[in-house]
Image (cartoon, rainbow, N blue to C red; front, side, top):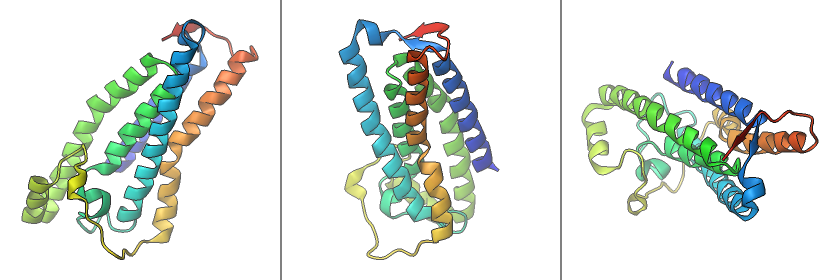
Length: 199
């Protein structure tokens, strides 16, 4: 249930951001073209990191999330690495829009909503795994990774069907980049009207 709500909330947020981007023009583009290029470059790098990180996390939870406490791979350096990499990718999308407003909206939405999601999920894990989860909480940070804790098994069994489904979830950042580029092209061709200028 929590996962469905999270996905629904993320899609609604993405939809409204795309509406905003569709009716607005980037004010930095004419005033500071070099600045927009820097924002876009940083954004693309962050989207790449976010996408690869989500794929890495999905590899470890494919088929295990509901019946095991995962503490290796990305889960050895953060208790919520999937959300961390989602955060990196989402901020990357904001920067790739070449506006600070979109980036700020994404940051604000993430900061307000995801702590609640993380707390709810960790409460559930605490009930399921008790002392084992308490020990995990005491040794691994909740959100920002501590790479010095990294550990991984030499072999890991993955459910390919579930992992394949997770791939599509991980790629939405890249799809957002493509959609934003299409919107920018439609603005330049005067097909989409510009109602706002944002920075």
